[in-house]
Length: 360
Image 1: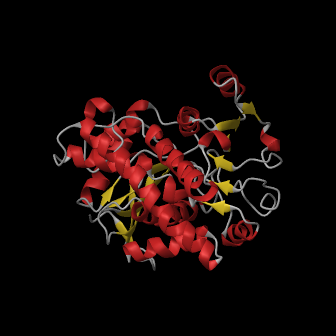
Image 2: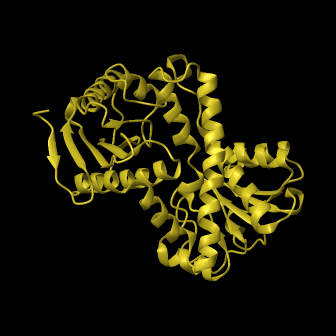
């Protein structure tokens, strides 16, 4: 590890910096390993030739690795939080260069001797993870033919559907047929969520910016109501489910939203603590995103367990991941929401306090 630099940053266990093949700079941030090895994806990102792009990459690695510690605690997994960022140029590397780059990144991961487990993230692909796997076993999210458990999106959507079911039964105390849900974003997770909620009998509304997705939804769910993207905060619904962009609930939208519950898969749905508390003051309950969108992390963890020989079959590993996702979403909401109501504090704030107790 002589060519790896270690940064001493307060609040993080280890931060490593290394130059990879082709001169690409990589950062691996390990936030906390009290519960187990740090797991988090590898981001391959271009920072628009910003003069401080190395600092921006470091900030991303730190922020995202910390978030993974909280999500692992919410998923009750024996994992800590980590994240890696490789700074890319504005152009796409040719296939041979890309392969060698991710081989060298795999060597970087392997040199940490299991302290960090990597995965696909923004800018990286399943093929990239295969290249990493050729150099280290400490990688998840592989193709099914190489021991992976397939697309994590359905399992993430199962977790969100469970959260909506929790609020239906424990907050509204109604049947699904009497509850309206507005699904914002028909990407992979949002599309599966629509399918699950339709099967459960909910009254569905949806929005997306893609006309193709809109047309597909109109054909598959003719009874569901389409909402223009700019109108989502004008519609009175029981549950608003953000499954696209982050910070959709911010200082401009927090006083407009007409839903009674917010529960979705998007990361960082609420802009900050002040916005979260304002949402709570308006009587709108919020399921903190990382406490319910933990299905993907749960799936890749059990993929890792299967590949380590601790679970006999892929089918069994996937079955366990789905059951654990349901169980932990329910457990988190049981613990967070009633206490948030009792203390009159946003679940956003309370969730962090509860998860910190799990990993400190």
